[in-house]
Image (cartoon, rainbow, N blue to C red; front, side, top):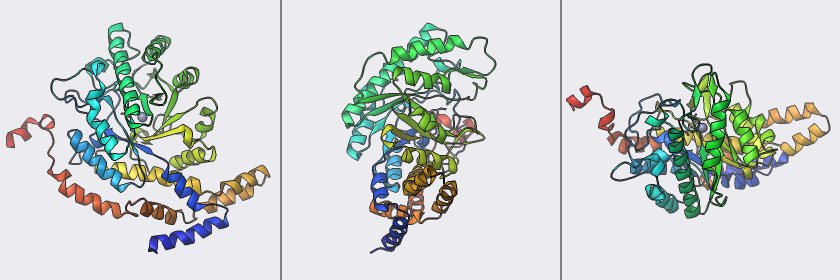
Length: 432
Ligand code: RNT
Ligand code: ZN
């Protein structure tokens, strides 16, 4: 018996004492697939190669070795998945199409432009999720896309939405697992609008057109993502939380909850049981805002823990699609995926190991003293031993052992990459 397993056995007994089945928690966690955000691998650059990142999205940091094409991004993802226990998904974006040859406009994208992603996902056993990209494009530079007052610009973005939704359905069909297709748009205003109603009416029309064709939910699930504010949309966001909550309820769509898209004092975990009362499915964008929607790498903090507890205690995991959404270029980008995903999994495991039956009993009996005591003592139960054993069972490195492996990858693979010439300054090119 390994040292890890021996520690687990002791932990398992300790958990049994508080009425918790650690083996059941391990089995349950193994069934949770988390969708890694492809855009963490290259600072949301994509492969169009033409347009700078914008429309409310910003990445800081200049860690060397960012992926410059699909093969490099897939290699980096392979490395991340290797260091994360369990089997997980990939969340793509339209700008990661591989078109070979002349550029294809976003409204003309087809499934074949994602065939390498689909082949790779099939070979490696990953489900795919998708997103139309409504940013970093000349037609989004006014700050408006689906809610734009110009019908021609709206048409372009509606057609983009339709194209990506169809591609998403093809991905779902090809891989035998529904593809969550998430719509986020940057539309909003820096300063006080004179008309708040008009853009929202236009957005509803655009969304209804994008979702008009009934597609099989076996293949694709439509999600919409609200936001409180963004860079350049500080005063007004067309797709606010109230707007999309209403839209999701009325049209039967998946509601995306991004943990960076609320006021810092709002508690996302508390929203879940409310939302699930009237919405069938939720997509989570697990992120970490620091003072603003800064998209820092997810850590095992109170916010993520409460979300995990609510998903487990409300038995909502089967109705939840969990994705990561952050972009940090100040650290090794592959490490960002590994840390963010493992932290999210740890939160779920901890939630699964909470003595929740006893806590609920205490609550029902009005014994809030016991409820508080049990919850607090549960924090120091040996969940780490269960996590380590889960990693060992899944063939993933235990504890910080993954870091040494990633450092090797950094030296052998990432260090050999040079920044693409388009991002070099003139001076750098001259001395090359
Ligand atoms: C932006 C949203 C959105 C993006 C990605 C790239 O505020 O969070 O989800 O981060 O689609
Ligand atoms: Zn998001």
